[in-house]
Structures are given as C-alpha cells and as structure tokens.
Image (tube, rainbow, N blue to C red; front, top):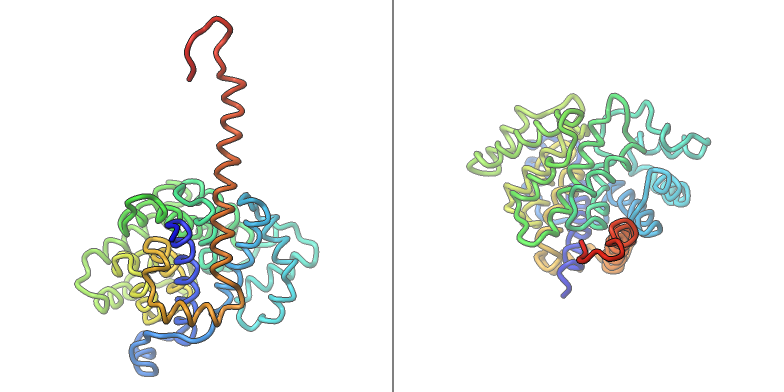
Length: 342
C-alpha cells in the first residue's frame, strides 16, 4: 500500500470515526458519560458538522489544485448549501450564520465578523494538512487564511488553532514523524506574538500529558486547568486533542476513544486527535471492523477522497516546484562565458 495514501486515508477515517464516536457524548461531563455509557469504545453513524465541513473543504482544495482560499471555501459552501440546509440540525450556529451571510452577498472576508469562539475551523481543517503533506509551515499558513472565513477579530485565536491542527497533520507525513514531532510542529509555525496564547496553551497541555501517569489523571487535571467559559472554545479543544495525541502515543484507536470519553466537546476533540494520529500511523493501524463500518456509514467514498487529496498534494507541490525552477532558469542562469550553475 502506498504510504502517503495510507496516511491520508488514516487521517480521514480516524477523524470520521472520532466524530461519530464522540457524537453521543458531546456536551456531557466525564461523570455523566461514565454513568450513561460506561467506557465508550465503539461508534455508529457518520458524525456531525465536523465531518460535513471537512468534506466541503476537501472539495474546495481538490477543485483549486490545493490552493484554496476563503473565497474558494465560501464558494463551495454555497454550492453545497442544500446539503448544509438538509443537515442543519448538525451544524453549529456560527457556521449556519456564516453561510446565510454568504447567501445574502457578504464578502467571504467579512462573513466571520461577530462569530463567537468555537472549533468550527480547526475541527475540519485536516485536509489542508494532507494537501501540504510534509510541509507544516505551508499547512499552517493556508489554514490560518482559510479559518478567517469563520473566525476573525477578537476570536482570531481560532485561526491559530486551525493552523496548529493542519500543521500537525502535515508533519505526520514526514519520514520518521513521532507524536512528539507532530505536536512540536503544531506550534512551531504559529506567529510568535499573535499566536502566543495558543502556543502557550498547547505547550502546557502537552507537558501535562507527558507528566500524567494515566488517562484518568490527565483528564481530571486538564479539566481543572484548561477549561474555557464555553466548551466549544478552540483554546480548550485543540490543546486537548494534541495532548491526547501524546497520551495515546499516536495510536488513532486510543486517541479517538480518549476523545470520546473526555467530556465537553467530545466529537470535535476526538475527530481532531483521530485525524492527527490517523495521519501519523495510517489507515492500516485502524481496526478493520471500524474501517468497514465507517466506510459503510459515510456518505462519501473515503478511499477515493484520500486518493484525490494525495493527487492534489502532488499537483500542488509540482506547481510550486515548477514555478521556482522556471524563475531559477531565468534569473539565476549563468552569463555567457561564465562556468558552472547554481
């Protein structure tokens, strides 16, 4: 099996599984989850708006050869507005409002004004990591721009959250990638001043995961230290997802189970941790029965989608390389009579 394709498929499948597994426990405290479900370790269905928005973003990336901007994502949201409308009970209010603003003629760069803090961009940003496979800096930059469709102004830290997740996924494609390396790359390319808060929160959460003797202790201490006023705030969910990547040692099965039992915004935490760990270990690391079940439940062919995203990643890289080589030939060609080349 092609390694890149296996990683891309793992990212998509584990993210979808995490979304589906966390759906029944979403909004519940850890104690409520234990009382109602016991220990959640399986799933049904195909997830929430996390996965729907991820598919819409993936389509925008594929159509643009990997170079999608907020205009392209906005255009794809409008093109698929009937799908969004038919499943509107799954969508967070800020996403619904953004789509309605776009329908009313708002410019994409203005549609996010007034939106509250959430994880609506970080939860679905993983395809940006795939099309920038092995290039976390580029993934972070593109994700930050795309996230401005949903978050700006006072909640621009949500752009940093999306950039961190995309960079982690892209980093997972690098040879020799480890849970530590992808978490380090998640913050390495955030803006050091503008992104200071997200960098600190992710770093502190990662250190807590390293020091915690087990999952239960980590979960208890995390909720005591990292909760925000809203459970959907990306300052709570994204540091949790990256810390769970470490706690699960990159295993996507453990990561999604940890996320689904974590409490609060469980579907989003599980889908992000699943996407990162799925990219790290690949689809071949997932239980075959899970793969079969989620493929059957999904409204999209995840195998084909992974193939198209990897093809897009190759096209994007070739386009960038060809542009550089063309400029190099013109501007750095040796003068007549000079020897050697750069």
